Image 1 (tube, rainbow over the protein chains, first blue to last red):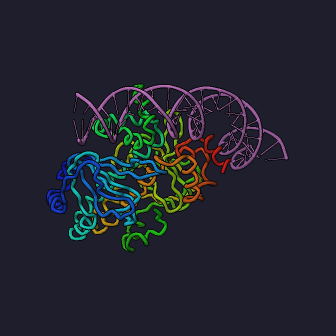
Image 2 (cartoon, rainbow over the protein chains, first blue to last red; image 1 turned 120 degrees about the vertical axis):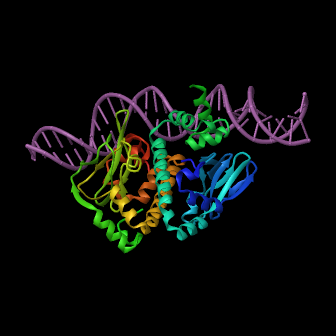
Length: 183
Length: 183
DNA sequence: AATAATCTTTGACAATTGTCAAAAAACAAA
DNA sequence: TTTGTTTTTTGACAATTGTCAAAGATTATT
């Protein structure tokens, strides 16, 4: 789901309310927007650049999610539940990021319940997208998943390290290197 | 997420409104609640029994989702988008199923916008659960995923065919048979 | 109980992917 | 440019998982 044009997704008055809640900031490459072990209070919208969530499994750096222009990203294991997060949220290239605190978003919805509907619609979309990724991971080979990534999000290929893309696809860097050698 | 006690999740008046929309019916083993290639108009809540969604990939029957008592299931690739579904929704044992048409749920929300909030909260939960499954599929071995299934949903083990559980975990039936032989 | 149908396990082997180590290539900083 | 750092590729080998076929075990039907 792409939020580049928020005002095409929600009514204008809601879009401008949301914009007033955004804190926009530039961050250098490798900056951590959120650190594991803490509760994540923000949702990030990428204006320019690329951001990923990752965590460590047995010492290995594993990418869970990648967001580029117009996409949302956060420590999803924390922001709703308020539990401590296992994830880090890292800026991969010099980026401009809109942050919105989840709390202020909730206050907005309390103040204007007529906006709840749009939040629900957005969540329905995101849920369906998540279901798609589950299906892809379960039932497609590493090569099929890589080919699909090239098709659906080609801009990521040359901007994100191979190692990050590999773990995002659920394979090792070496395997991905070999996959793309034999097209 | 478990909807056994709907009235603990949403206010009583909403719970009773929802109950009035439910069409409850018993179905025999192997009954198809929904057939692939058609648009899915209902969400199903399992009162008693087990239901799965599956599709065919290269002739093979692949289980995408399994729901037992208190859980929701539907053809998620269709019910929101209204596209034709790739999934079948099948009753695995004689079951009692509540069906709610997605349209009537939407009408309910139009009539009582104060309920939107609860729909959003439910979707947030479901979304976070989906993110968990993605992480599990990406970064855990077949054995870890099976051990986790035993821990989290032990009641499925002896009620669902090994082949269905295997494809739900993303592995073949033979591999799962071997995994559980060596604990 | 006997028979048929379905489900699960096993064996032999193939294909895919992972691991570790090192070389090559690309990128960044002085 | 030169040097140092990071990223990507490659090779050799190991581990995991898949495929196909057949045998057992279980469940359902007559």
